[in-house]
Image (tube, rainbow, N blue to C red; front, side):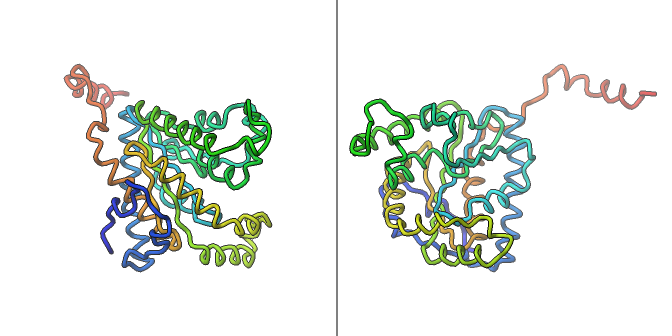
Length: 293
């Protein structure tokens, strides 16, 4: 298997998405990729137990990508060995009536993981600078003062929104949230194949929507706005990683490996020490339990 270097996928300067490949097999067979993922996710599960015991940090994993990019299956496979109480997954869809009565970050803020836990956002606060850029009329539903029509949504509006998102993530990082942001870089050809598969498999039909084809026609715009969002918001405390997503199995290994590599660097995430008093009396406690009638 090819070595996975997170720097190969990490965005540390302005990039062009077209320069990133959408497919890799890491020089491995599907069987080898499956075995590698099993090893890495077991280590991640162990880390989460220590994270919970330490209760100093939380971890936020943000997943973005075009329809069919593999977000759902990645979550299922990468976090399979976690204690179910240690990971919280939130899928963000069209805002509800209640969510629309708050600012656009509110629903994301209340879904953040508590200390000791992993939180996974399946689609994220970035929908508010992606879908809304492609469909600016959606902004009107937010009832923002001074925004009466689409013409009021200018470049200054989007720059402020990027600034708000950067401030939001900086606040989280400064208060103990470790942030990973993954863009699953799917090719248009592979999306076509996956949509056809949805249509051809009875158990997948329910996932298909005619709207998928409408959004597919806007592929170029989405790529443009993804690129801009990534360039404006990839920061040392909240980096973006562009993951080749045409091969789902390889994408899962890459995402899991990047997280494990980064999390191992936190030397202050350790299980708490027993107090001196408890340590001194361990033998007595053991005797009490062993001598119970």
